[in-house]
Image 1 (cartoon, helix red, strand yellow):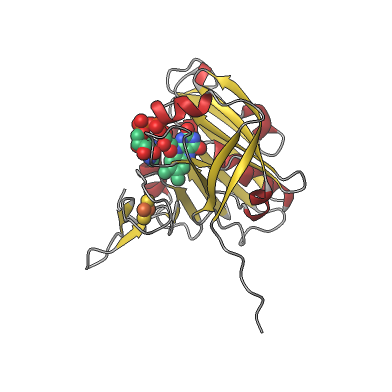
Image 2 (cartoon, helix red, strand yellow):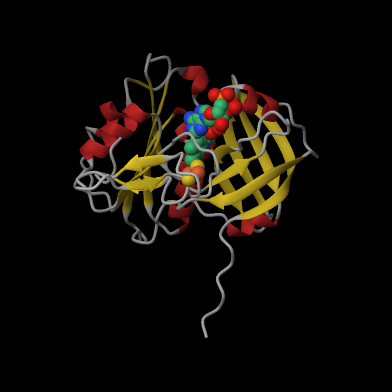
Length: 264
Ligand SMILES: Cc1cc2nc3c(=O)[nH]c(=O)nc-3n(C[C@H](O)[C@H](O)[C@H](O)COP(=O)(O)OP(=O)(O)OC[C@H]3O[C@@H](n4cnc5c(N)ncnc54)[C@H](O)[C@@H]3O)c2cc1C
Ligand code: FES
């Protein structure tokens, strides 16, 4: 008889062990709880905002996973009221969390010494950190190209450097190489076993086109979400080259999709 699968979506009050503003309006929250044992790179948490007027949970990617310590971190930017309220929570507070949700990054085809490319933009960099760590642990050679609007928005550079060869770009040239990530990625000549990306829509469109024919190139997408568990179809994206109007749900079928598979 097959072992019974564990439920993939859990709900737990995770304990906030710390919360720090790591860049203007960008916060890192460290969370502890049993749910960490189930977490996989590229999945997200669906956080309830502790305010009765905010009924919809907020989806935030998992940035770092430490199963031994039952500790995970998220990094988020204050965007509107929900994330503003989250940013005022203190260590010792608890946060009602559903997750880990979605299909994360598939790392299974990467073996020791393989070359892997990570392409991240802005607040899309956090899920690539856990991914870089897991890939480095496999013995892969990880190259990361990370793009930000300007110097003050740069996050996770030092952490990434522990596990990857990192190049930073800024749109205004205030730090690193001036330009978009494409400025650097277009110059790379290595054969990468896999490519993982997360960032703003414009960046993902570039990745989608550039690596359309790559067998293992993945993008993590964002859509407005409601239920966050596949029931309401608020978060659909359309499949490319499909005769019928075929959809996929970002919360359940994604957030990670292969390049050249969905309409961006
Ligand atoms: C799979 C996934 C992973 C994400 N990971 C991160 C992350 O790691 N760090 C980070 O800073 N942000 C992340 N986001 C975006 C984050 O969810 C929104 O910034 C946040 O929900 C905004 O909430 P708010 O109340 O502050 O803003 P408001 O604009 O007031 O939000 C109003 C409503 O819109 C929804 N909403 C607003 N913006 C977005 C958005 N971009 N995507 C989805 N729903 C949105 C909110 O959930 C809420 O229901 C992610 C989004 C998705 C879908
Ligand atoms: S948010 Fe309800 S199906 Fe994705």
